Length: 458
Image (tube, rainbow, N blue to C red; front, side, top):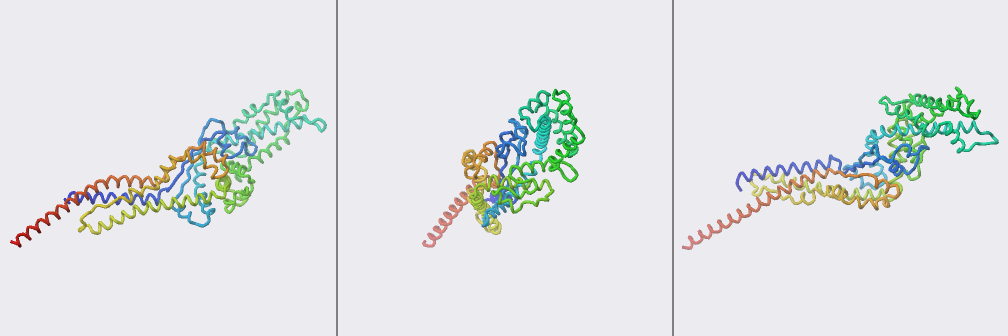
């Protein structure tokens, strides 16, 4: 082999070594598997996500339309530690740790969605309160022990006064502006805005023909009653200084969807045993921590705990991924060791090339298993996945609406395998030439030995 060709081979060996190191480092430090989910927030999709048409008396249709104005984007990551923890005998603890690790990320990614959605939630809550309060007041004023007034009569009376649901919605519409301000809002500001709306609505009573309504006086006592009622609704969403926290609003909505009380997030449905061990105390004041706990409870109660076998399925899947992961790692380590051996014998080694079959065949298997296969097969798999996870209808609706994509650090190994494939072609050519040169050299040596033998005979 010529010196130039030998130098070229060693340079290519160096490139292979770098590829091996990058593939190994990628497996260890990049997310081994990451699932990205985009969920459009429409009325029907939110109903499917929460499994209910209303929360705390507020209809989801009043918060969301059927045209998506914002998307919920988040990702779930599986790392190397998660793979090895799958060999733990406690499947539930393994799932619990996996959810704990990802729920913080999901809540952080919820920030932009909360900014867009929570003002609508707060406005709808206030609108419902005003409607209920006005209708209750009218019913009390028109009713008597002997002659109670029906809800239909109350609706008609308000309609005659021009006080329709649409009118109340428009009057309370400015409430949303309070929640979109950069400085946020407080309970007192919401109370003042509701009282302004109440003043306007009760002022219309003076045009009524019914003396009970016409002579109604929205007294200071009545105002205090409304103030206390509004404070009772929104103070649950505020800190000790009265500042309303949108994260706490969502936490309470999830608590309602989980079937838990507002004061004790650990008292959830029986199916939430996975989350019960880490439920915060009733005095928990951190809204972000509370939201994370409620989100974790929602995930466990609506997906993992509906079917006792789900934790076991996930455990076995991660164990299988771990096997392919180790196979991929070993393929690259094997080539790296061979290169080190070649370097140690640099001066005497006749064939400096390295056979790269192992990484080309096995080094990129995680990419095949965790990106290529799920990307191609998931549209088919999701049709029967709900029945495996339990809660087929709800999970099926979520999978039908959501857009799911996959990512794996195995793409680094795929790129490295491609480099090795290209280099291996050159190495095959070099080894072929070395074999021919070795054959020719052997043939020449044989001829020389025969010539010497002939001379000796003569």
